[in-house]
Amino acid sequence: AQSVAQPEDQVNVAEGNPLTVKCTYSVSGNPYLFWYVQYPNRGLQFLLKYITGDNLVKGSYGFEAEFNKSQTSFHLKKPSALVSDSALYFCATYNFNKFYFGSGTKLNVKP
Amino acid sequence: ETGVTQTPRHLVMGMTNKKSLKCEQHLGHNAMYWYKQSAKKPLELMFVYSLEERVENNSVPSRFSPECPNSSHLFLHLHTLQPEDSALYLCASSQASWGTDTQYFGPGTRLTVL
Image (cartoon, rainbow over all chains, first blue to last red):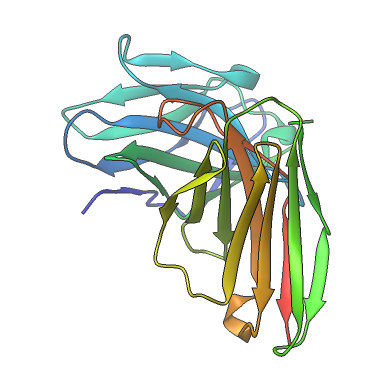
């Protein structure tokens, strides 16, 4: 079955520290992978996507993600977390004309 | 803002009511989507429209009825809903319905079914 998994319901990190939000995928063929962020009472906002090419993808607000084919992962990273990064993060994939979203990871950045 | 608006933002309805959710995109996109977001569950894609034609229907119960009168507007008509249908309903749009296109989401309608 095609899917993405976000193994952590919640990630806690101190402001200024690096952060990682994990995502693994299970798809046939070449995956299209996305990260979205959702702030309270808002819709999802696009952060970045991997379609093809360079495995390291840079996105909005200083976020980046690395496509790792051997580990079937697409973890979201940021070198220095901000309190304002606290939100719900969704990994997603598109495969064979269908979209699949993960269940989301809540990121808490503490001052 | 993303250019996708949804009304109402909050809706409380009884199981016998009929109501409609409205979505409007101001981005000139050709594809529009309805998603259901329930707590601690993956986002569920409900419907996809491309150039006003439905191209995807993910086994959604018939008590949800979408309508896309033009490429800028999308409706979700609701009737005889169940309490388990309570969720955040998100609308999104993209330039095309290809998976490589970025989707832009509205703020959602928080639906409560009593």
